[in-house]
Amino acid sequence: MTAAADLALILEAAREAGELALKMRDAGLEIAYKAGDSPVTNADLAADALLKRRLGEARPDYGWLSEETADDDRRLSDHRLFVVDPIDGTRAFLGGQPWWVVSVAVVEGDRPSAGVVFAPQLDETYAASAGGGATLNGQPIRVSDTDVLEDCGIVSNARLFSRDGWPTPWPPMRVASRNSTAYRMCLVAGGTFDAALTLIPKHDWDLAAADLIAGEAGAVVCDHLGHPFAYNRPTPRQSSLLCANPRIAPLILDRVRHIPVAQPRP
Image 1: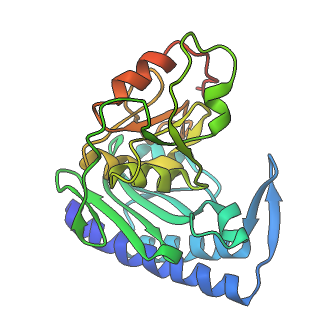
Image 2: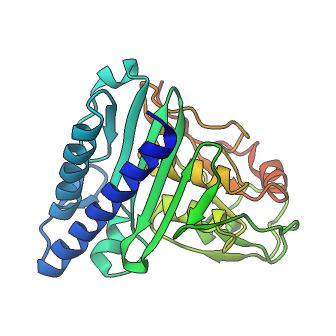
């Protein structure tokens, strides 16, 4: 199956899942909490079930990895698999903020070949296929050309830059917060921000679709050591995230590569 055909499939499925989540929120949500006090709603679970059914029927030979489905190590033998976060940014979803998305990727081998990040409240659909460029609502997008850290726009936790331990203080930057990791990366892909940075682990379902979208838009996507991500590993988690335009990515890496970061379990 071609990446273009997979992209068409996940575009339609992601929009269906997002529209379902909106309808369920309007009707009233049931909320539970997972380990670490992370909320999950009946809309998360319903969107996950819709995507699993819809995508599984279309591609029964593809594996499956999702935040809301128990992991099955049989996926490790699958050459292609769907990597899904039915609602990335559940706290924003619960609070009525628009910064939540449906994130769906096809991973082939250890890299994404098609990806969609759909923000239903904003009616923004970011999409990419490997080698095909990245789009927002069907229009090509590209990263910014900012080449200095001073006054750059970065999506991160502002407290990160003021904590002790930085050999060189960070210059003044425009730091903004967004709940969804995938959406942060897409904002870099579209040039709205210059970089996104987190030094805490992120799961594959947070990253895979947006990794491809940002990369196709010209971004550097890697961990704090500059290593690109490999997906469909036994532990579906990456140690950290830098997503930035190629001019300022080295400037950020120079500052963060020696900072101790918690590593994922093997």
